[in-house]
Length: 127
Image (cartoon, rainbow, N blue to C red; front, top):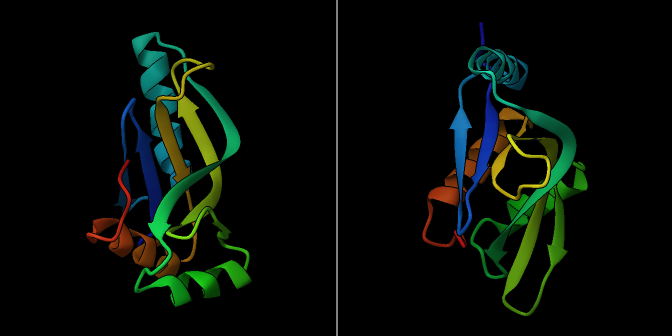
């Protein structure tokens, strides 16, 4: 039996973090809903997009361009030095107006591993 993966992007006030989670996103979201109900806190979720920047000279840019051709991700040139990677998924937060929250998405295992590898490299733009 294969393990399902998902990518989780946690957005804080001044940065964000990308994690590879060995759990189906549906299960992870269900756990968050149960936790919020048990704690008596609000939880808001909606289909959304999330984006982060990578350098235009990224060593894995060709692999990202291949993913874009399959419509798993979208690449948008920002300026001469950076490219924006756009993902589709679910946005969760405790305040509907907040820019602080968690974004989850499920892509192919290879795509998730590539994005995670890029996020762990020195080429990744964390801010």
